[in-house]
Image (cartoon, rainbow, N blue to C red):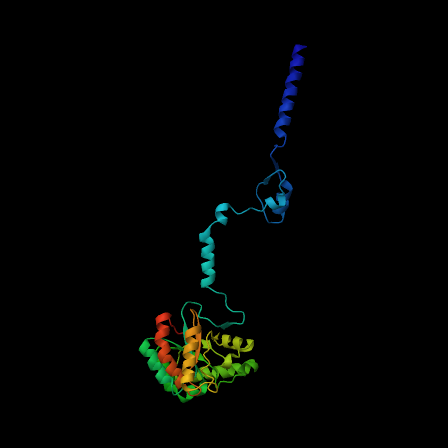
Length: 291
Protein backbone atom coordinates (compact mmCIF):
# COMPACT_ATOMS: atom_id res chain seq x y z
CA UNK A 1 0.00 0.00 0.00
CA UNK A 2 2.80 2.43 0.85
CA UNK A 3 4.56 1.59 -2.47
CA UNK A 4 1.38 2.32 -4.48
CA UNK A 5 0.80 5.61 -2.67
CA UNK A 6 4.44 6.67 -3.24
CA UNK A 7 4.19 5.94 -6.96
CA UNK A 8 1.00 8.02 -7.26
CA UNK A 9 2.63 10.96 -5.48
CA UNK A 10 5.71 10.78 -7.76
CA UNK A 11 3.55 10.68 -10.94
CA UNK A 12 1.56 13.71 -9.78
CA UNK A 13 4.73 15.68 -9.12
CA UNK A 14 6.13 14.91 -12.57
CA UNK A 15 2.88 16.00 -14.27
CA UNK A 16 2.88 19.34 -12.43
CA UNK A 17 6.50 20.00 -13.44
CA UNK A 18 5.71 19.35 -17.11
CA UNK A 19 2.81 21.83 -17.08
CA UNK A 20 4.97 24.54 -15.53
CA UNK A 21 7.68 24.17 -18.17
CA UNK A 22 5.22 24.58 -21.10
CA UNK A 23 3.34 27.62 -19.72
CA UNK A 24 3.84 30.99 -21.54
CA UNK A 25 6.17 33.55 -19.97
CA UNK A 26 4.57 36.38 -18.05
CA UNK A 27 6.55 38.87 -20.21
CA UNK A 28 6.63 37.58 -23.84
CA UNK A 29 4.63 35.75 -26.45
CA UNK A 30 5.59 34.56 -29.91
CA UNK A 31 3.99 36.28 -32.91
CA UNK A 32 4.02 33.13 -34.98
CA UNK A 33 1.15 34.13 -37.20
CA UNK A 34 2.75 37.38 -38.37
CA UNK A 35 6.13 35.81 -39.10
CA UNK A 36 4.59 32.89 -40.89
CA UNK A 37 2.60 35.14 -43.21
CA UNK A 38 5.66 37.32 -43.85
CA UNK A 39 7.75 34.28 -44.68
CA UNK A 40 5.08 32.98 -47.02
CA UNK A 41 4.94 36.27 -48.92
CA UNK A 42 8.71 36.41 -49.30
CA UNK A 43 9.03 39.53 -47.12
CA UNK A 44 10.55 37.90 -44.07
CA UNK A 45 11.84 34.62 -42.69
CA UNK A 46 13.88 33.02 -39.98
CA UNK A 47 12.79 32.25 -36.43
CA UNK A 48 9.51 33.59 -35.02
CA UNK A 49 9.87 37.05 -33.55
CA UNK A 50 8.98 37.65 -29.91
CA UNK A 51 7.20 40.86 -28.95
CA UNK A 52 6.38 42.31 -25.55
CA UNK A 53 2.79 41.69 -24.49
CA UNK A 54 0.56 44.62 -25.41
CA UNK A 55 2.72 45.74 -28.41
CA UNK A 56 1.19 45.64 -31.88
CA UNK A 57 3.00 42.81 -33.70
CA UNK A 58 2.50 44.43 -37.09
CA UNK A 59 4.42 47.54 -36.07
CA UNK A 60 7.01 45.77 -33.98
CA UNK A 61 7.87 43.31 -36.74
CA UNK A 62 9.40 46.17 -38.76
CA UNK A 63 12.88 46.77 -37.33
CA UNK A 64 13.41 50.25 -35.92
CA UNK A 65 16.59 52.19 -36.61
CA UNK A 66 19.09 52.04 -33.81
CA UNK A 67 19.95 55.20 -31.93
CA UNK A 68 23.44 55.17 -33.41
CA UNK A 69 22.12 54.83 -36.96
CA UNK A 70 19.60 57.64 -36.65
CA UNK A 71 22.13 59.92 -35.01
CA UNK A 72 24.93 59.34 -37.51
CA UNK A 73 25.78 62.79 -38.95
CA UNK A 74 28.53 61.47 -41.18
CA UNK A 75 26.26 59.18 -43.18
CA UNK A 76 23.61 61.86 -43.75
CA UNK A 77 26.24 64.48 -44.58
CA UNK A 78 27.86 62.12 -47.04
CA UNK A 79 24.55 61.46 -48.78
CA UNK A 80 23.82 65.18 -48.92
CA UNK A 81 27.22 65.98 -50.39
CA UNK A 82 26.83 63.26 -53.00
CA UNK A 83 23.43 64.59 -54.02
CA UNK A 84 24.65 68.18 -54.30
CA UNK A 85 27.77 67.29 -56.28
CA UNK A 86 25.83 65.24 -58.83
CA UNK A 87 22.61 67.11 -59.61
CA UNK A 88 20.04 65.14 -61.60
CA UNK A 89 19.81 66.03 -65.29
CA UNK A 90 17.05 68.53 -66.11
CA UNK A 91 13.76 67.02 -67.21
CA UNK A 92 13.85 68.86 -70.55
CA UNK A 93 17.39 67.68 -71.33
CA UNK A 94 18.84 71.20 -71.58
CA UNK A 95 22.09 71.95 -69.74
CA UNK A 96 21.88 75.36 -68.05
CA UNK A 97 24.70 75.06 -65.52
CA UNK A 98 28.16 73.52 -65.67
CA UNK A 99 27.40 71.07 -62.85
CA UNK A 100 30.55 72.16 -60.98
CA UNK A 101 31.79 75.38 -59.39
CA UNK A 102 33.41 76.33 -62.70
CA UNK A 103 31.89 79.09 -64.84
CA UNK A 104 31.60 78.71 -68.62
CA UNK A 105 31.86 81.65 -71.02
CA UNK A 106 29.96 81.00 -74.26
CA UNK A 107 30.00 83.20 -77.36
CA UNK A 108 27.32 82.87 -80.05
CA UNK A 109 26.59 83.80 -83.66
CA UNK A 110 30.18 83.82 -84.90
CA UNK A 111 32.67 83.63 -86.12
CA UNK A 112 32.69 87.27 -87.12
CA UNK A 113 34.98 90.26 -87.58
CA UNK A 114 35.40 90.69 -83.80
CA UNK A 115 36.31 87.04 -83.15
CA UNK A 116 40.10 87.56 -83.53
CA UNK A 117 40.08 90.36 -80.94
CA UNK A 118 38.15 88.20 -78.48
CA UNK A 119 40.50 85.28 -79.06
CA UNK A 120 43.51 87.51 -78.40
CA UNK A 121 42.02 88.66 -75.08
CA UNK A 122 41.18 85.11 -74.01
CA UNK A 123 44.69 84.01 -74.98
CA UNK A 124 46.25 86.82 -72.96
CA UNK A 125 44.26 85.81 -69.86
CA UNK A 126 44.76 82.07 -70.38
CA UNK A 127 41.00 81.48 -70.47
CA UNK A 128 39.16 78.81 -72.46
CA UNK A 129 35.63 79.39 -73.70
CA UNK A 130 32.94 77.79 -75.86
CA UNK A 131 32.00 79.18 -79.29
CA UNK A 132 28.52 78.42 -80.67
CA UNK A 133 29.07 78.92 -84.38
CA UNK A 134 26.67 79.41 -87.28
CA UNK A 135 27.22 77.40 -90.44
CA UNK A 136 27.12 80.29 -92.92
CA UNK A 137 29.64 82.21 -90.81
CA UNK A 138 31.91 79.18 -90.60
CA UNK A 139 31.73 79.08 -94.39
CA UNK A 140 32.74 82.75 -94.58
CA UNK A 141 35.45 82.70 -91.87
CA UNK A 142 36.91 79.18 -91.75
CA UNK A 143 40.27 80.54 -90.61
CA UNK A 144 38.67 81.93 -87.45
CA UNK A 145 37.22 78.50 -86.62
CA UNK A 146 40.71 77.10 -87.04
CA UNK A 147 42.03 79.75 -84.63
CA UNK A 148 39.30 78.89 -82.10
CA UNK A 149 40.27 75.23 -82.14
CA UNK A 150 44.01 75.95 -82.19
CA UNK A 151 43.63 77.96 -78.98
CA UNK A 152 41.92 75.04 -77.24
CA UNK A 153 38.35 76.33 -77.11
CA UNK A 154 35.22 74.19 -77.48
CA UNK A 155 32.90 74.35 -80.50
CA UNK A 156 29.11 74.23 -80.36
CA UNK A 157 26.62 73.88 -83.23
CA UNK A 158 24.34 76.95 -83.48
CA UNK A 159 22.52 75.83 -86.67
CA UNK A 160 23.16 76.72 -90.29
CA UNK A 161 21.75 80.26 -90.44
CA UNK A 162 20.28 81.02 -86.99
CA UNK A 163 16.72 79.90 -87.72
CA UNK A 164 14.91 80.67 -84.46
CA UNK A 165 11.93 78.53 -85.51
CA UNK A 166 13.97 75.47 -86.47
CA UNK A 167 12.78 73.45 -83.49
CA UNK A 168 9.18 73.63 -84.70
CA UNK A 169 10.03 71.91 -87.97
CA UNK A 170 10.20 68.20 -88.69
CA UNK A 171 12.87 66.00 -87.17
CA UNK A 172 14.32 65.37 -90.65
CA UNK A 173 14.59 69.12 -91.32
CA UNK A 174 16.28 69.73 -87.97
CA UNK A 175 18.67 66.84 -88.51
CA UNK A 176 19.63 68.06 -91.98
CA UNK A 177 20.32 71.58 -90.65
CA UNK A 178 22.48 70.41 -87.75
CA UNK A 179 24.34 67.87 -89.87
CA UNK A 180 25.04 70.48 -92.56
CA UNK A 181 26.49 72.78 -89.90
CA UNK A 182 28.66 70.03 -88.45
CA UNK A 183 29.87 69.14 -91.94
CA UNK A 184 30.86 72.75 -92.62
CA UNK A 185 32.74 72.94 -89.32
CA UNK A 186 34.61 69.78 -90.21
CA UNK A 187 35.64 71.27 -93.55
CA UNK A 188 37.57 73.90 -91.59
CA UNK A 189 38.71 71.68 -88.72
CA UNK A 190 38.47 67.98 -89.63
CA UNK A 191 37.68 65.55 -86.82
CA UNK A 192 37.16 68.23 -84.17
CA UNK A 193 34.61 67.10 -81.53
CA UNK A 194 31.24 68.88 -81.74
CA UNK A 195 29.47 67.80 -78.57
CA UNK A 196 27.12 70.72 -77.95
CA UNK A 197 24.10 72.31 -79.61
CA UNK A 198 22.46 75.63 -78.81
CA UNK A 199 19.15 76.50 -80.44
CA UNK A 200 18.93 80.08 -81.77
CA UNK A 201 17.07 82.27 -79.33
CA UNK A 202 17.03 79.42 -76.83
CA UNK A 203 13.86 78.19 -78.56
CA UNK A 204 14.48 74.55 -77.74
CA UNK A 205 11.78 71.98 -78.46
CA UNK A 206 11.72 68.31 -77.42
CA UNK A 207 12.25 67.34 -81.07
CA UNK A 208 15.31 69.58 -81.44
CA UNK A 209 16.81 68.30 -78.19
CA UNK A 210 16.21 64.69 -79.24
CA UNK A 211 17.70 65.13 -82.71
CA UNK A 212 20.76 66.87 -81.29
CA UNK A 213 21.21 64.00 -78.85
CA UNK A 214 20.96 61.47 -81.68
CA UNK A 215 23.79 63.37 -83.38
CA UNK A 216 25.88 63.13 -80.21
CA UNK A 217 25.31 66.69 -78.95
CA UNK A 218 24.15 67.99 -75.58
CA UNK A 219 21.70 70.91 -75.73
CA UNK A 220 23.12 73.94 -73.90
CA UNK A 221 21.19 76.87 -72.49
CA UNK A 222 22.54 79.55 -70.18
CA UNK A 223 22.29 81.06 -66.72
CA UNK A 224 23.34 84.68 -67.35
CA UNK A 225 22.21 86.73 -70.36
CA UNK A 226 23.54 90.31 -70.59
CA UNK A 227 21.40 90.94 -73.71
CA UNK A 228 24.41 92.04 -75.74
CA UNK A 229 22.47 90.83 -78.79
CA UNK A 230 19.85 93.58 -78.33
CA UNK A 231 21.49 96.31 -80.39
CA UNK A 232 18.16 98.12 -80.71
CA UNK A 233 18.03 98.87 -76.99
CA UNK A 234 21.64 99.72 -76.08
CA UNK A 235 24.63 100.91 -78.08
CA UNK A 236 28.23 101.92 -77.49
CA UNK A 237 29.29 102.65 -73.95
CA UNK A 238 25.76 102.17 -72.64
CA UNK A 239 25.77 98.60 -73.96
CA UNK A 240 29.26 97.99 -72.57
CA UNK A 241 28.21 99.20 -69.13
CA UNK A 242 25.07 97.06 -69.22
CA UNK A 243 27.04 93.91 -70.12
CA UNK A 244 29.57 94.52 -67.36
CA UNK A 245 26.92 95.17 -64.71
CA UNK A 246 24.77 92.19 -65.68
CA UNK A 247 27.61 89.68 -65.75
CA UNK A 248 29.27 91.08 -62.65
CA UNK A 249 26.08 91.05 -60.57
CA UNK A 250 24.57 87.75 -61.69
CA UNK A 251 27.43 85.30 -62.18
CA UNK A 252 27.64 82.58 -59.54
CA UNK A 253 29.52 79.27 -59.36
CA UNK A 254 28.25 76.90 -62.02
CA UNK A 255 26.94 79.63 -64.29
CA UNK A 256 26.91 79.48 -68.08
CA UNK A 257 27.25 83.02 -69.46
CA UNK A 258 25.78 83.90 -72.85
CA UNK A 259 27.47 86.56 -75.02
CA UNK A 260 28.09 87.12 -78.74
CA UNK A 261 31.13 87.52 -80.98
CA UNK A 262 29.15 87.60 -84.25
CA UNK A 263 25.81 88.53 -85.76
CA UNK A 264 26.28 92.30 -85.70
CA UNK A 265 28.43 95.01 -84.18
CA UNK A 266 30.06 93.34 -81.18
CA UNK A 267 32.53 96.09 -80.30
CA UNK A 268 30.64 96.82 -77.07
CA UNK A 269 30.87 93.15 -76.07
CA UNK A 270 34.62 93.12 -76.73
CA UNK A 271 35.05 96.30 -74.66
CA UNK A 272 33.00 94.79 -71.82
CA UNK A 273 35.05 91.60 -71.69
CA UNK A 274 38.28 93.56 -71.62
CA UNK A 275 37.10 94.56 -68.13
CA UNK A 276 35.27 91.36 -67.22
CA UNK A 277 37.83 88.71 -68.12
CA UNK A 278 40.39 89.56 -65.41
CA UNK A 279 37.60 90.08 -62.87
CA UNK A 280 35.94 86.75 -63.62
CA UNK A 281 39.29 84.97 -63.68
CA UNK A 282 40.13 86.30 -60.20
CA UNK A 283 36.78 85.21 -58.76
CA UNK A 284 35.94 81.95 -60.54
CA UNK A 285 37.43 78.97 -62.31
CA UNK A 286 36.68 79.63 -65.98
CA UNK A 287 36.48 76.60 -68.25
CA UNK A 288 35.29 75.65 -71.71
CA UNK A 289 32.51 73.08 -71.77
CA UNK A 290 34.30 69.73 -71.61
CA UNK A 291 34.94 67.61 -74.70
